[in-house]
Amino acid sequence: AEIRCRGAEGVAAEAVEEDVDDTVLLESLEQLRELRNSAIDSDAEQNQNPDRLGQVGDELKFDASLNPRQRALLHEACERLGLGHVSEGKGAERSMRVWAIAPRERMKGLERALRVEATAAQERWEERLRDATAGGVEAG
Image (cartoon, rainbow, N blue to C red; front, side, top):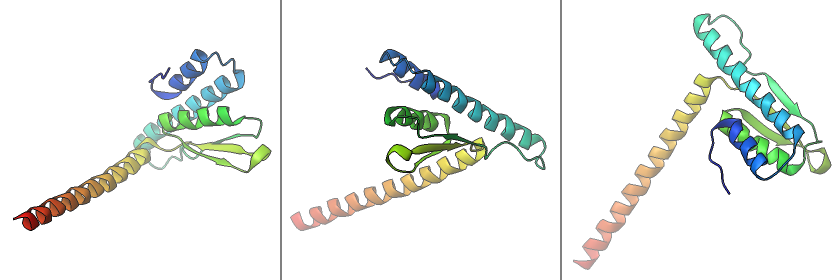
């Protein structure tokens, strides 16, 4: 069954529902939540004092002891929490790196993605309109 929850809680709830007794995963999810919260706090302080260097850019490194399922769940939690994330290495040496992104930087990225999607949608619409118009002209 699929659980649609926000943030790391959703991934934790999924693990619990599937009877995954995974202390490492739950501890890792808590670390992700703390990293995200530090980025939010840092961003708020930056707004009050722009010269202050915040904690955005802090990283977590999860070593190769995570199995592929744990890593996949952590990647999903990172997406939900707005954290940067990447797996590195191959096979038994595969690890995961996670970093904080300032909320306003995440918003800029989302705005760029929305503009790209809007442009692509407009182009698809115009192409369909041209196709429909060309088809109507040929039929007439």
